[in-house]
Amino acid sequence: MTDALSKLLSTRDWLMADGATGTTLFNMGLQSGDAPELWNADHPDRIRTLYQGPVDAGSDIFLTNTFGGNASRLKLHDAQDRVRELNRLGAELGREVADKAGRPVVVAGSVGPTGEIMAPMGPLTHELAVEMFHEQAEGLKEGGADVLWVETISAPEEYKAAAEAARLAGMPWAGTMSFDTAGRTMMGVTSADMVTMVNKLAHKPLAFGANCGVGSSDLLRTVLGFTAQGPEIPVIAKGNAGIPKYQDGHIHYDGTPELMAKYAVMARDAGAKIIGGCCGTTTEHLKAMRAALEGTPTGPRPTLEQIAETLGGFSSASDGTGEGAPEARTRRRRRG
Amino acid sequence: MSDEEDDIILSELDNEELVQQMHDDLYDGLKEEIEEGVNILLGRGWQPYQVLTEALVAGMTIVGNDFRDGILFVPEVLLAANAMKGGMAILKPLLAETGAPRMGKMVIGTVKGDIHDIGKNLVSMMMEGAGFEVVDLGINNSVDAYLEALEAEDADILGMSALLTTTMPYMKVVIDTLNEKGKRGDYIVLVGGAPLNEEFGRAIGADAYCRDAAVAVETAKKFIARKHNQMAAG
Image (tube, rainbow over all chains, first blue to last red; front, side, top):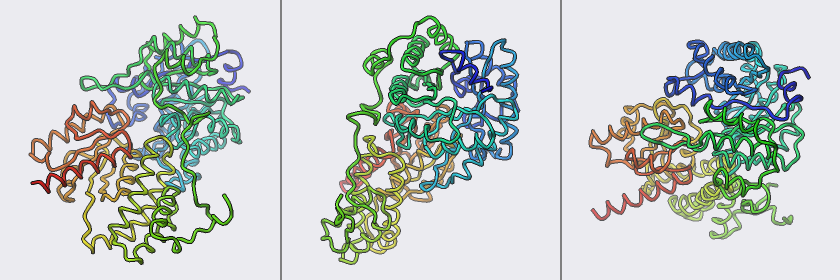
């Protein structure tokens, strides 16, 4: 294994990823509804600043500004013919910042969902999804991304399509899903389901896990669900800095740097190897997380009670794993 | 499950059993079976409106409740809505012919600047599943687009969706404009989207914030019933 992420994973007990991209860009003046990816071409300095933040705060991995850089999302901004260019630029700027860091920093090419519902329920076929992700992957590869970083996925079909695209592009990859609906993804995937799915993939990710979702408590419950399955692949925890609150006309995430520091330590104790933030996680949060991860010895696996006590309660009583999970009605008819 | 349970002959069931079976078939998203069930009930002389409410809407209510309670998830709901749609396609022309009471009509779309539409699409499907007429304006709607559609469609309900913290304040712009034009009272305004909450809904002057598609349906029903009562009293 010669890729940068595998190297770091083999030499370190834990790695710190980055925090929020959207939150940071909005603070830099991104207007609602604008495609952040266009800034890779129009405001490269702001994107360098975006990347420099986590590097200076001690992140070992940062994600490129290419989350919505697939044809389906860019089409909404009439930029579907700029997929390759915007992804290449996003990765190039990342390469530039990482190579000047003076220590190994991984440039992770962010790949977000298409926003379409996959067949047979929706219009997006596997082939089309693979094609879109592959196009994006080639741009990221061309720009020098070390790995592809698939994130905020809800549907297993979409996760599999991204895996296939990474294989076609010859890229190592990592991939996280968003567990935001009663502890499952919007499409009903539990943490245990995800481990089963990842284990069956032909082109396996270097790491898998959860990002975004509800709050940091829910995210850690998901991590416990992953590690309970004894996965061989390293686990990623990238949770939001609390929950968004609407205050005086703007949005504020209620998680403090102190809280995120506790979250980071608990995530490691729960078995996560790559730990970062998501929405609302600023460089202040990242600095506190880095300091806590370095200054705290690894402890025992936290219980759900300890997580709730330290970080706040869960959004639902169950996350669909273990006992007490709500069950669907027994189906009376069977198709012949 | 034993073998003899595999083959349920819908036409051999009495009305009560058939309606129960249709609730189960909706739950399982079996479109052809729902279409068959609708035709059988119509053939037995049921009014289209009775088929709609007792077989389809009641069945979708069960689906909606289990979705709300985290028992069913989006894929199952989409399948159920699809099965419902099959039944509705048969009933729709008949309902118009028989002058059946309207559940209500909703104009829905994501607000200006917001292109995230999965939540909005789910609400559309669940509302249709509950028997409402839905006019979907798609994404990125201006005040003018909403107002024109409300008027042209003679709608009862306005549904606005936003997924971004930066676009949700636009909902207030739309509601303020309705107020300025003296039309706010003509419509039930429901808002939804991941970053919203009840407090926000109240702050901008919406009638209600709806946490998910199932809640949106229940809330719409409640407000429509209230509106009908007021009309009856007035």
